[in-house]
Image (cartoon, rainbow, N blue to C red; front, side, top):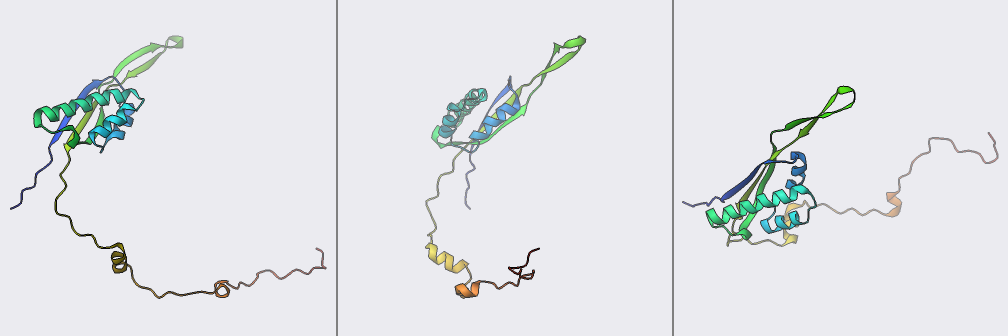
Length: 168
């Protein structure tokens, strides 16, 4: 009976962040699937406000992994990042002729899930040479050679030829 070790996952969440979810999702897409050091580098050089918040959530998730599970930062990667919409604060602004305009102050919940990278298995299958693989997978065809004269198609003109001396 073989035992398969499932990768451990660690999660961190920031709730009620005073930022539009749409703006935070743009930054969250950049770090999804990357290793933690690489994700930190991407966030450090991203010039959006959401990058700072995501950096804090990522740091929290890494700290959770180290403190609770003893997983080193180098062995972690960002499995999922998602941004959900939070409650919307509705405010009013006075406009002309006694009217009002609604101001929506949006909030969001940011979640980062880290997982442990799987160790590479020590047994590796032998790789066949590329030429052997190509000959085994491609069907053999007889090569046809064409001469320059044979490759030109003779097409009949649909219009009759014009006479040089005749004017229309």
